[in-house]
Length: 424
Ligand code: GDD
Image 1 (cartoon, rainbow, N blue to C red):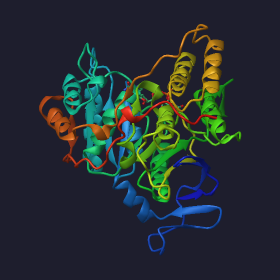
Image 2: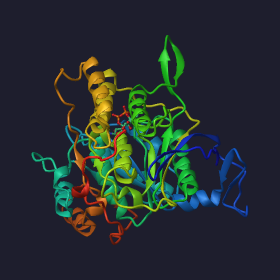
Image 3: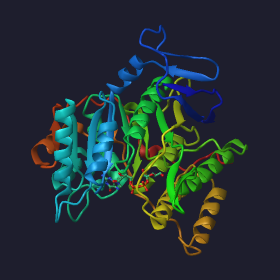
């Protein structure tokens, strides 16, 4: 794979936000016999097929799903490169038709035909809730039905914990409502290439899709705008500008549903619930590694936390869930930014003004506090696995044996985080 390359990164402490780099060639000429697995000129980087495969063998691809048509999910599965381990986390209806059972049958058949392993779980299974509770994350459990709470972020927390038990080093997410298997394939290849190039134990790759096709007046229109992302990106960039004193449009992936990261990084990070999950990743990185809050865990500055933003070639063709859904995602992003101790008072006021203007808040009201979950690295994974194997009827492994790796990270003690002392 060949990607555009630039050294011009935006810094927030140890976090290095790369500029948007486009995929130049999905399959480049860099072959396995090349002496360097990653090489390039001043403008591009290529990652060899061997190096891509090496990362893919260490990559878990999570598919969060909720009532997508069977054929769409089957397309997504078929797009995931062979060496990646598939992890399906479902929140689909169990009645009147058990849609999870349909998903399991598709997954099992796919694994049989493609001769590859996979893992699946249903997040509302009370056995899964009990296992998460026993592992040390009772907040994520729904008090009424005993399963993991509904929400995409909640599915991703559960997935992060399962990924940590596979012994692999990276985790990536692809939405299940994607109609183009080729784009899923490209996203996973981009994860592998980005993680290989990042060259840090603490790295993240976020996808900026090229376009979202829509039908307008009977014609296809390839929209460049993401209606949620443009608001989230704008406010995140304003935050960067408050600290640096320079305006910027560096952040282009505030809401990236498609992203991957090293587990060394993921296990240290708190995660937000619902659709606040992706914007909160920026907030959490700034809080933990931005160097503006006292008590944050040190990351050697020569290693840093590279955050690559990669522009893909395929169109992102997915379900359009309407204006209310878009508004709700926007506000969830702003809620987590507003309540972060790294958010300067001036920006808080701008967020409130925007939300009042949009009718999301009454004057004098504060933005809602989203749920924030402790880092998965603080969980007792052995108890989680024990609970899943003994109580979670929905937990299935196809040709895969879970291993619980010892805890290798020390999550930041949150009680050491105080209000920022340095604000622009
Ligand atoms: N397991 C699980 N549990 N999956 C969920 C849940 C849940 O509670 N909620 C949503 N999902 C799955 C959906 O089934 C779908 O595959 C994927 O998450 C995305 O959900 P959508 O509701 O389709 O969101 P979207 O497509 O409008 O938004 C996507 O793109 C945004 C950026 O534009 C999401 O990925 C957002 O997280 C992202 O910010």
